[in-house]
Amino acid sequence: MAVYDIEKFRKRMQDLTGHNRTLTGKACSDAPAVKCHNGTFVGTETDGVRSYKGIPYAVPPVGERRWKAPEPAPEDSGVYEARYFGKSCIQTEAASERASLYMQGEDCLTLNIWTSAGEEESSGGKPVMVFIHGGSYGWGGTADPLYDGHNLVRRRRNVVLVTINYRIGLFGFIDFSKVRGGEAYRESGNLGLLDQICALSWIRRNIRGFGGDPGNVTLFGESAGASSVSLLPLIDSAKGLFRRVIAESGSIAFTYSREEAQTLTEKLLEETGASCMEELAALDEDRIRAVNGKLNDHAVFPVRDGIVLPEDLYEAYRAGRGSGVDMLIGTNADETRYWIGEMGGWVNYWCAAPVFVRSIIHGFREEDRPLAEAFLTLQKGSAVHRATEFFNELIFRVPSIAQASFHAGNGGNTYMYYWTKKSAIPHFGACHAVELAYVFGNLEETIYTGKKADKKLSDTVQDMWVRFAAAGNPGTEEYPWEKYEASGRMTMLLGDDIRMVSDPFKENRVLIEPLLVYRYNGNYDQTGMVVKYLKKAAGQTALRLVLAGTAAVSVNRLLSRRK
Image (tube, rainbow, N blue to C red; front, top):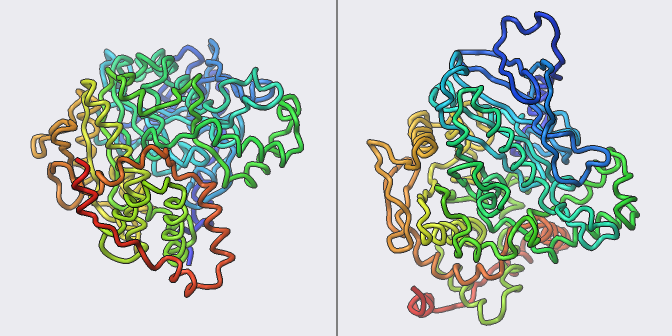
């Protein structure tokens, strides 16, 4: 049984679709308008909140600009409607990513702004919160109703909220370094990140006209967006464009080496028959759209290319390259149960997750496999529960802990949370993305929560996020928040129970930390291999036999050797 109703979502997105016009005469006389360097943008006002949607921040990356670094939007004296979201980047439709059901195109580099009515001409002193959407760097966009900023700004009038589109999939993250002619595309593996930096430059130049303080910008993102805000502090060209980051369920772990990234490049060449960059650049948009759909399993994350990103990101944080940026980071208790929906339901997930764990452990060196086996032995419950915990720790929580620890160790102002509020969707638990409805205050958006979100928890979390954006401390009067340091590892639980705890699930962390050397990133390429394996399996009985046992390992003995 499908978890999501794609046709219902498609109708919802079609109702949001529209095209912003060039305005003349008195067409904008009664509407809110803000003059920016690249035009005057005319928005709308509802319930005391003004919104400006689909503002271009860069030259369209089309034609000869495809797969090139973004070029900032030029000066423009025109007047433009800003009522509708810009296009989502080209991507394969997915029910769980509603922006994929919105209109798509290569010309996708736009942003959206929400601000309190009547305050655009103020001193420009409000903190600015910039949201970067998730979607495994291959899906998503700002048109998703979950990311609409109206409710957050209506309740938190002291902030300006911005959401940005960036290139994803084949358009945003593909390494051409080994393709003939690729020397002219040396940054192609990280174009989506460069788009984000270009958007931040536009914000710094223009946000004062919307009431925002260009010197007090906080980035926040979820999943690939959280990975993005974790990577941006390490990029030289992003320095000075923001002061704080909030990383929800993502970290520097979501990256590829250049060697790993080559699979997608090779598949693209094979699928298109191209042999050089000239032939790839000549492909029309529809052709690449079709190819993108065939290569979803091989899509990559940002590339540790040594050009845009350091080749060793953990070492970069350890060396203090992210210093000077405040960080709030955390994960959810049941992150990977989100993929129940992606895999088509609980039965598929129940079958696949333990097999996937086995394939990962098989790739470890022989001397490291006992750590993984000890971890599985330590967990209670069924094989699928143990697998879920393994993924939660290896892909999400422990990489975030490592990032936070290195950042705090260099004097970075750091805070950690652990989300425990569960979804009402059967088996989902406190899954990946479940917190987004709470953060944005979009309580009726139940795609991940399963029912209307808890308003009290939403109000509390919004207070925390906005306080952090304003002054660098997410604590409230009711819930003081201690800084995260490697000594105490103080972490805020966010759910039905809100409180500080020290080093939660220490045993899990100690066993998984040594396995971070494998730089496992949860890529879809490996997921695809597991799914193909399952299709060939003789049946669930055979699968149960494959999944059944976990080697008997003395967990206490292993833990005693590690702190």
